[in-house]
Amino acid sequence: MMALLASPEAWAALLTLTALEIVLGIDNVIFISVLVSRLPEKQAHRARQIGLALALVFRLILLSLLVWLIGLTAPVLSVAGQAFSWRDLILIGGGLFLIAKATHEIHGEVESDHEASDKDSTGSAFFWVIVQIVIIDIVFSLDSIITAIGMAEDIKIMIAAVVIACAVMYVSAGPVARFVAEHPTTKMLALAFLVLIGVALVADGFHFHIPRGYIYFAIAFSAAVEFFNVLARRNRRKAAE
Image (tube, rainbow, N blue to C red; front, side, top):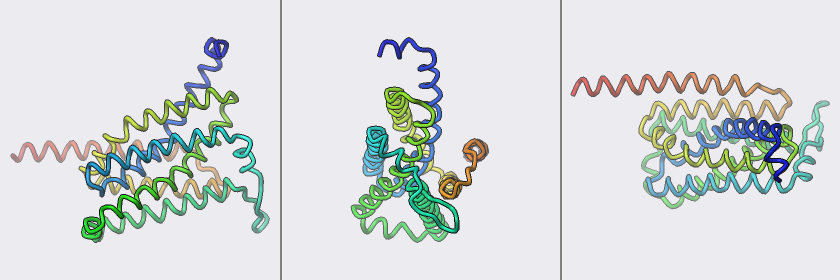
């Protein structure tokens, strides 16, 4: 352990992997923030805590099953001459779920037909939010840990990077969720991001890799533009008052 702490290569691997895990965790945070935005504040806070705790638990469980996890990349199905592994099938299924869920939420925002049903069954809404968080946590955790395996060889480095990244997700999830809930236009933007991320997951499942840097740059640029729009609207409202 001391030799690992004294190794510059180990620290470089930890910093690089932690940064990557934080970036990959953005997807998780956005999805959870959008889902809990319809719940009452107390339930939303509880759902965020459960969702992020599950994200950490799933990642640590997958790290403890490295041999099994590596086996998920072996081909199990061939369609039209293209081989698919369990990882590919999970990414395709998760991506399609993300696209369908985000599209459904966009429709609900446009039609404004969700408020009454949410109020009628708050307990049921909380249960389904947790179910959806569990599903997408598994998909994102699988993608995150397989990426970690390819970047670091020491299990201690991978565990440390995952724990640090989940701590950052936990700290940032609250402010992100509140911002999304308070500004409807940012929620629509977040849903559009989720569609984009879902398409990227499906493409990965079909072995067509879309560099995540392009996706996250588009997200960062759009978020910056929306931030200035929110700031401008706030200033105009203050000036009018």
